[in-house]
Image (cartoon, rainbow, N blue to C red; front, side, top):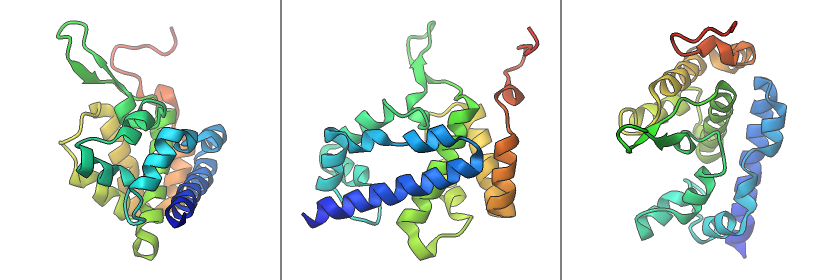
Length: 186
């Protein structure tokens, strides 16, 4: 029963922290609905079974099974994860990353910062989310523009702090990042 309560507290603290970040980022509705799938049977009980408190239960589940059932469920239902944004290239028929809409990159930023705060506790610094991101850079299947924007936001957080970064995020619009050749006035 202790793992049930501890996992519930961790998920709830994380969601609360993401909610606070989403308010600062100007995406209130996304903050309210963030990670609701974590309370589904598959994700919640998988999280309880592999709960440790110092890292995501998905890591321990991967070590056991070679993949995480809960993560497979989670990433398929939450658009703030870059893993959600993949499709088959119509020519090669191979999976390829798709550029994320800016509103979900904003939520992904909020999620990553909150996760660092929750798992690192008093060891957290504004550089921690960037350091975590850079450790896997080049190893993940993420669209280059999405990766570049997230890295820019995490670097800004590291160098300029939360207030300036969230101010920038609030002002960032989807059309600021249109692919080349797209005229937003059409």
